[in-house]
Image (tube, rainbow, N blue to C red):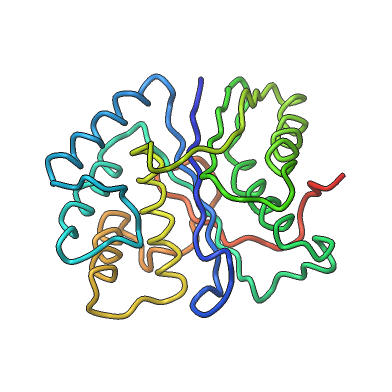
Length: 235
């Protein structure tokens, strides 16, 4: 089976309200990708949303549109979501990441992706564009994932970055990842974002939204609080 994986991250830069960083990904069977993209674009048009969908843009005026987009995710059997939550206060960058926050960031990306790579499948992995201090970050992540997959009959045919403004599916990933991060870090009661999180909780039927899943198995909505340490992307 062939998958396209759309990835995004939230609260990873640190600072106030960013204790918990979240890295998330949408797994979409490639044969359904174009239809899903068209559906999401049609939903945006019907709701009168012309701009890019982003968690940061959830507002009272557009709240119902964002709820409709999230409902499409829950009702479509060909879209699966996984996210890892990292307590940034517990990350020892000196010990595990050579003092390099960016290196640690991509190690966490590896942890998010690796658990959902299965034998006899091919994966096209698309990360939201990010300015990296080291231009080799994405090629190195691709190499490490291929090294993991090769003896397991897992193909990583591509790993690159995209502009999320050009992809409705990437925008859906932004919404879900932003919602998980907001829930993990705390959201002011009575705000449109709190209402949106409550709507997502009703669909997941698990509270809070950022509550860890019972296992990392492939599922509709999977949340994992990462155990720090992990694999090397620097050698």
